[in-house]
Image 1 (cartoon, rainbow, N blue to C red):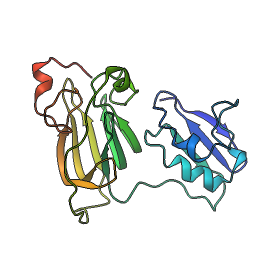
Image 2: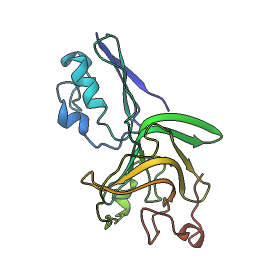
Image 3: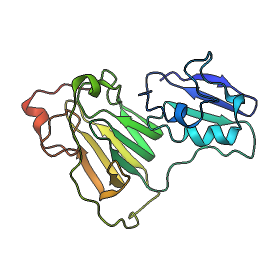
Length: 214
């Protein structure tokens, strides 16, 4: 992943175009800094470093990161509780202390948007291919009363299995679009072929359709 840096007096903004899914949290929340009609489109000095940092932490894909140059703005820290949010007709938003295992390496993240339509050209990340594919999926899981996670601070291991689902291990909450908890768990397999009849979970359909993914 190649992040491009935009230097400001008090903060440096980093942007990875390959991870961006145009959720537009940055543009909608702080257009003074993030404006696609301007060049450069990121101008960190047009708002306070704290405002910029707060908005960057809303970016669901992790395409935006920051480095603070002043003591009053802290570095980003993982959410206390790992969460996986099901986006209607779209990807999985994962937040927390994420350890992504891929190509024999483990990378640390705090925000990810993972493909679950099976069509992304940048697997395991979402690249908005679900829009062109007309990927239809909306959660029908009912909200449940949330309780403290067993080990809120433990890492969430995320591992895409070759030609199969996304394995997850570690305490997490599964959320719907309204940020309501619909399930809590510590282990699971999430569909990423797009054809499971038990979304967001894998039901083995990837084997029947000969799903191919690294």
